[in-house]
Length: 52
Image (spheres, rainbow, N blue to C red):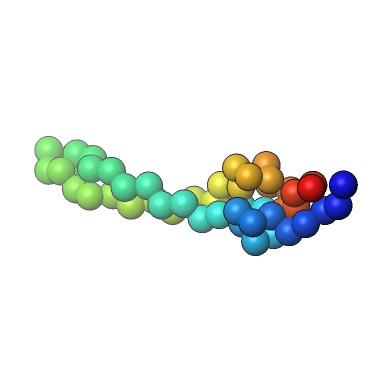
């Protein structure tokens, strides 16, 4: 088996994800909320490489 750069994350070990939701503020108004976070790649489990 040889190591190859992960095709899912291009070797970056993860990807930036964006989550969108609507939340109610303290006054009862609904506001759109966007959160960005880093998540390990699901193809290589965060290693950056795959074995073939």
